[in-house]
Amino acid sequence: MELYNSATHRKEELKTHTPGHVEMYTCGPTVYHYAHIGNLRSYIMEDVLEKYLRYAGYDVNRVMNITDVGHLTSDADEGEDKMIKGAKREHKTVLEIAKFYTDAFFEDCRKLNIKTPDVVQPATGCIDEYIKIISRLMDTGYAYFAGGNVYFDTSKLERYYIFNDHDEENLAVGVREGVEEDTNKRNKNDFVLWFTKSKFEDQALKWDSPWGVGYPGWHIECSGISMKYNGEYLDLHCGGIDNAFPHHTNEIAQSESFLGHPWCPHWFHVHHLNSEGGKMSKSKGEFLTVSLLEQKGYDPLAYRFFCLQSHYRKTLVFSWENLDNAVAAYQKLISRIAALDPQDGAVDQAQFDLCKEKFLQQLGNDLNTSMAVTSLYDALKIPANDATKLALIADFDRVLSLSLMEKAQAKRDEDSRAQSAKTASGYTITGEGDPAVDALVLQRYEAKKARNFAEADRIRDELKAQGIEITDTKDGASWKRI
Ligand code: AMP
Ligand code: ZN
Image 1 (cartoon, protein in one colour):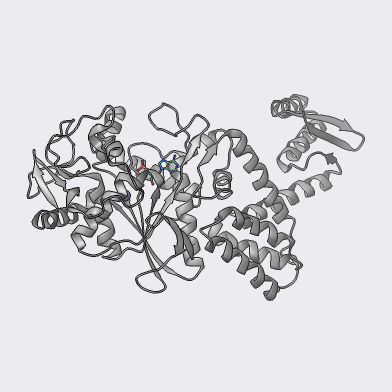
Image 2: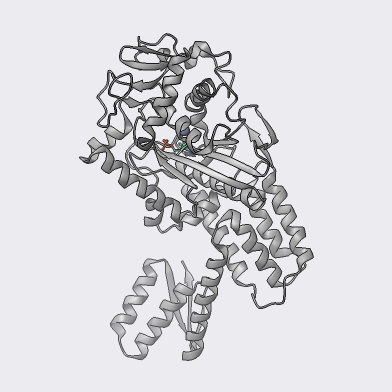
């Protein structure tokens, strides 16, 4: 597979330490609040990547952390801890907050057909790992103790900035506006590996360590968890683009200094989903969640479809209009699949292989999901019977996970229910082909027949509230959206 590598700034073949096997790591959520749909864009694209690798024949071990300790508000390892902030906001303990939002995160993932990684490890469960790494970094001179905390000494590295040619002065922690410089640091980009003293409010969760009772910094958890479950050689590290600096940069610094050899050659970064006003943020009051989409009547999988329509390396702008367009395209696609007859012949293997080959190529080319979606439409157009087309759709959906077969079958069932109800009553409904509306129109007819005019009027009003107007005809009714 050709995949863009942020560490080398080019598209390159994914090479793995063990042929045919991928050790993959994903930075997991910070469980202090619901995930916003921007966070979930990253997890959707990473999910497609994992499923594609499996589909293409790799054996994958995917590991993800849950940040339930030590994520400070600012990138600069300064500021109020997000978990403590969440606990205060909701008058709960940090662990209660972590449990609640971890469950909420996986519930969102379930609704978006995002597979749970093979290993999911909360950061609080690996304290010994971090202590082991930090101890060696202290012994080998990569870390130092100052003012009660242990810091990584970035001046010990030949190359610190991996992902960009950063201007050190602009990025340096101490010179950022509003961030007070930590005077314990020897160099501006040094970062905390272990806290026993923070000038900000203390952590609720603390552990004993050779440097005193305290808690880990954020970056060390991903290195520790990955090395524990992926081993010393990681093949592919994933995360949102905002994690490239300083989080991933610091992960590389500490992991390679600890291991004494290169750690992870390939870095996959998903670009952001922005709102029309700019960056998505959880601090600005109401923010976009999967539940909010559902409350507004959207199918979470239409959001997944929306994400797949664009490339992971492009910033994606969210607007309701853009989402509505995706909903319309998704529903139309389902209708086209529903119109295929599963009983129509046997699968034409030659046509199947030809079409599948193209799909593999599209995703194998830097995970081009929008072209992979186009492959679904191509499958509908091939010169073959319906059974072949359906077999292709089902096969591609192993990677795209849009529940296309299930939704198409549900549509077929619904259509046939509406159809048989229509035929049974000899009542003809002409409309815009929406079985839910047809069913209500039919219910109104049944109510009228039973002389339950109040119910018939109620249904007419309900449809009117949905912007639908019914007109009675000679042998039934017709409806339209107004
Ligand atoms: P967090 O819960 O803040 O640790 O973030 C979880 C994941 O979402 C990380 O991989 C982030 O890089 C990613 N992320 C944060 N904001 C966005 C966004 N607006 N669009 C896409 N991914 C994001
Ligand atoms: Zn991480």
